[in-house]
Length: 229
Image (cartoon, rainbow, N blue to C red; front, side):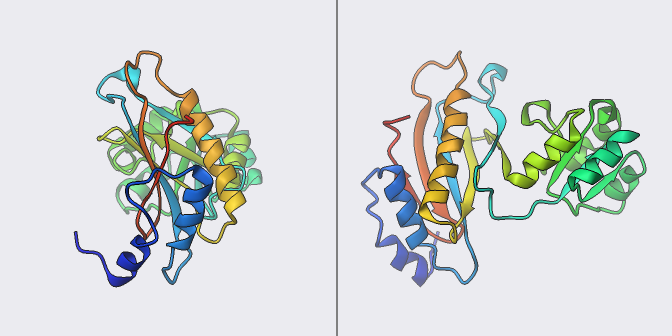
């Protein structure tokens, strides 16, 4: 893969043979984020899990203390009082069955997270083919299937992110923006790593965290030492 001049310049600041301490890695990732927009800083964690086994699947959510720096649009599927609750909590869209054709037929996807009450999952299930591939399907493990819709909306708006293994058993998650201070990014990174270390499957033999790297949207990755985790 060919990289541009800016990327190659930035890459010179990073020693590829070194695994940095988290604070150092964060400082470097901020330094190499030189794009004209506020880049997202992402963490990529390669695990020793085998996601083909149900007992080694990792999926959950964590509220980042300083948010993600991105405003998140929330759609809530509910009925009765729960619709008003979701609206009062600041959900961007609320509704029920009437939203199905809008999403299925009109391709409406103006939302980033979907929350549903358990009694609406029969309805939401019909959107599996649309929402599933986009990672938008509500899930109890991520706290997006719940009767407490107000708390779910508040947490998401406050900076709750979902983490899960991809097909290569890697977790990719944002921990903030390049404009965040190093302290804010470090607090978010620590909160994420705490949650992931706790999520280690009990059945896993061998090394859990194989590699961790931190990278801005357009910049090179910085390796982080896995020793302390």
